[in-house]
Length: 417
Ligand code: NAD
Image 1 (cartoon, rainbow, N blue to C red):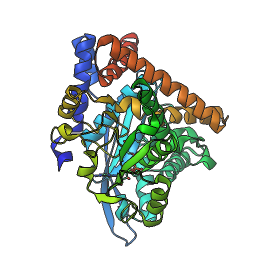
Image 2 (tube, rainbow, N blue to C red):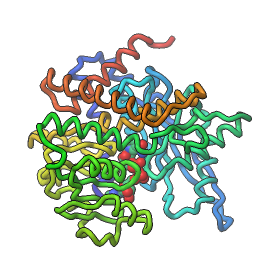
Image 3 (spheres, rainbow, N blue to C red):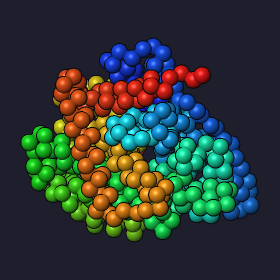
Image 4 (tube, protein in one colour):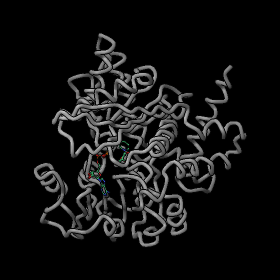
């Protein structure tokens, strides 16, 4: 219900406007950067297993490509909308700029419920959607990656479909692929690893010790599940976790690897016995030092923000905090590491994967993890320094860095013709 009330694109534009104002960008530059460059809507038929033909709607939006090819994930969900994809595309532009990798921002999505589809239906839908958006995607133009409900197998189908149309293999058209077809070591864990690095840096800045920190993570998928595991391994006490089936709380700490095994075996966290069941609403308000929303948008709102106990929030999901909640949490003195920094580890290793595919030269996992750590630490420091210098919070610090970089590239390239 909350999700429908807040339009993520309004949230994204508001965040941009505030940064643009502070940076003193010209009205022309603001007008250029406020709007996505390209938006493609595709309606296409898919034959279902029972022989029926169903129509699906999908999107691919490129927000800005002045710093490099468009980059961004593909999401499968019943809640996908053009405005959601626009917001996610804009956030990708800023994210690539925060970590200073040479990509612009894009995003895609299909309105569907993948949990109600067979693997064969999902494959046919993916291949047809790929064909429909191949007007835009390509290794030099726009490179998709996984997002909610999409995974390495789906990236493999996209890569194969694109390659079939070309007549030769084009591994660099997607990232987040399986290793066997040009994926990168470390990509699966990359987003969560980035979350771990920035969380560790923030813990250090606060003078805390990981062993004394309790953590709540919302979402137990690629990002949330692995982030919970890495923070558990770092010595933090993970007291709350959740997935779409609900939340779990144990003030003495949850054995995250055991919860992961349960989730893999049963398809969800539901029924895990070593913790108390809580609702997803209650989960966000649990007593803890660090809260990591890692599921979807609009989870922290003006309604629950005043009841948040965490002193540090790390936005592993994209857009989990509404503008109203952002202001409330800021006034409460909560430190918030914004999505465009916190979850940038994924696109950073996607960049490594793309470079490896183009060069046909692959790196070892420790090399990838070291480079990722270096970029995340450097970006965290740059954002923190900017925020401290300008006496603003970390979100504004990240936006000031990112928007200035994109505006500079846009200014230098000029207005064509
Ligand atoms: P995923 O599909 O692997 O996992 C999503 C998790 O959220 C699942 O555990 C699901 O059960 C849970 N969930 C879904 N709806 C929920 C609800 N209403 N309440 C509570 N939990 C719910 O997706 P992911 O790739 O982990 O992505 C999660 C977030 O991270 C998204 O916002 C995505 O845009 C962002 N992100 C992902 C990547 C990446 O590399 N995968 C990179 C950057 C950002």
